[in-house]
Image (cartoon, rainbow, N blue to C red):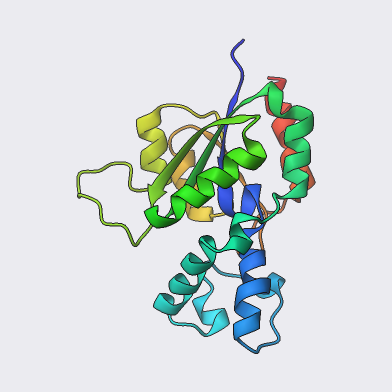
Amino acid sequence: MKPITIVWDVDDVLNEFTRLWFEKALKSQHKFNLLFEDIRENPPTKILRMKEQEYFRSIDRFRVSEEARNMSPNPYVLGWFKQHGHKFEHIALSSRPLSTIPALSEWIFRFYGSWIRTFGYVPSRKDVLGSTNIKKNKHGYLKWLGKGDIFIDDNTDNVLTVESLGIETILFPQPWNNSTLGVGKVLNLLLKYNLK
């Protein structure tokens, strides 16, 4: 029996990128009484009272910062990989501007390279693509790739569109989505798929 292939979103699944950006970069520049748990939408421009351009500029600048390059992986996810990662095949898939991909790929392979051997990305809203390029979102990328049994992402739209490909999907819990599972339950659920 061939191993199950899990496709992992990177930011806010394999790591806690948005929390780090919010607590280290944003709160130091803006004075407000919000907590990370108050970020109930993505992008959180209304909650943070930021213009979209200002938000993306801030988050993209942080993506290539030393702080982001040295961020710790999500400890629960990394612990799961150490214990169970060898039972599956793994693909990391991210949506970011191209200028931030070299730092991210180095980060992925530094922390998860013992298990993740394949990394793909789809250009985010800032990168220009030809209109015929089907790999302009995660759905298109996975349709083209033809691989993936389980897809894990914190973005509800990504989960819904990838689900239409017949891939099992799991919405990773974050304040901006309506996942009813905790991180531990998500990771335990993966082990049940391996028993099928």
